[in-house]
Length: 327
Image (cartoon, rainbow, N blue to C red; front, side):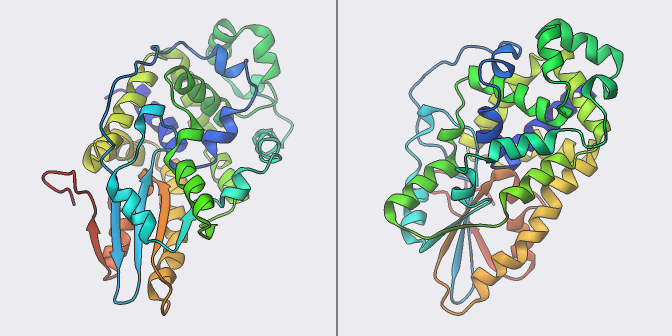
């Protein structure tokens, strides 16, 4: 597998593992970065069955957690959700997200994210980019547009370009599974909360090493056609409830090839969430809770599913349409 595709996976991993990346970056510079992104295949609408959920139930003698793996960007035909998700939502007395929905709806969040994405050391994009990357970006985006991006770090531009491709493919952040569940919770008047703040998640996105940021930007312009295929493949794996394939597509190589980004975005956040998740289970008469996070946080040995299982909780996959049932 080429290093180019591996870096693509790092970009997709960041997008799918951070809930606020989709709605905030999607709305940035409308009509410019997104429109100028390399063209993706036109979306094709076909009749589909409900996605097989990436849903687990962790429990002790008193309480249960429904752990639901979200895809932060979905299409209109990814709905309705499965009966398993509906039943878990109905059973849950409260809903917990990566970031509280009210913070995601804060109109100042986009400006705050752009401020964090700006250089704080006097440098500019033109100064940090190698000549070949700067030249290629200028050819694709135009010199004027490139100048407009000069104050922005590569990680934010990477995500903006990726969002541009996803938009052309029919993906929408407002259709993301977490946003859908948030709307259901509001209608049902169920209490909601978050495992971290928007500020914490922005800091996570900004912490990627500059070298990895630059490499990702170079790769995007070298072979942009690989991005739509990777998005389609990960979306298909998510729809099929195929935890093994989804992990192989996005997690395995990112963990090996970009270990710092992987550790910051996935491992450290999962570890930080664990005390909160355990409190939801261990507290007397806490009631059942649905936890909706990016699917990447549930998968593999570093995912919270295995971390809870290792702590002695009973953890089982909930997927009535999965034959045979996946672990």
